[in-house]
Length: 225
Image 1 (spheres, helix red, strand yellow):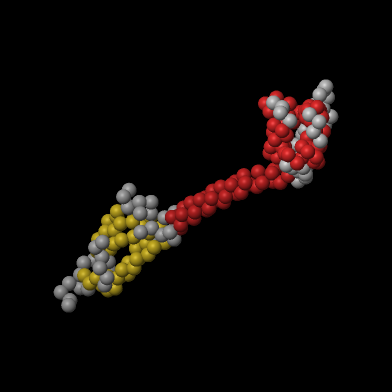
Image 2: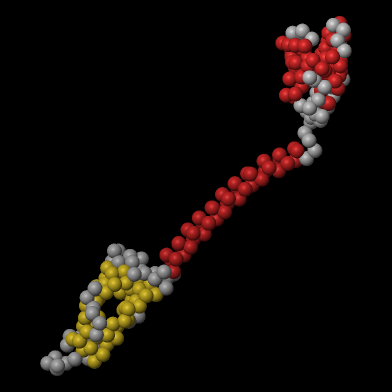
């Protein structure tokens, strides 16, 4: 039976149920005959005539039964339907136990899930950005020496070092900081002594690791092979 209605007392002169019952009795039709000819169960006819809609299967069935029964009794369906619509508002359709709570939980769960995903994505983006920035900060700068092959042998007592690094990097030759132009280019004349000279060329940004290139130059006397 339909448990979706809670019956309330209907105040008025003649209810729809009264109208149906009176029409049947005036035509001297028994409930048994009405049930047989309409194929509506006797108890359902009784529920219709007493307005016990809460005991019928459901709204769709109620209207179907009511329309069939109305036509059987030769009554005006539009008028009967209007009366039914007016009486129907007297019946409250309550939420099933736990139904409201479940709907609320489902409604809350979806935003929570979406909110959680958004937060997770934002956190991942922030972590990725921070990781990228930290990597840029601690990663040593580039350092290229363009005119200095390995194991140079010369009779000169100085050598010009030409190179390129990152614009924000500081360059050191044998521990002494040299000038670097805004583009990161540098040229430095380094004095040499007779014999083996080891030249340490390094570059470092403010918080980065240091990159070091080591070159050796052998200075021999002029005319010596």
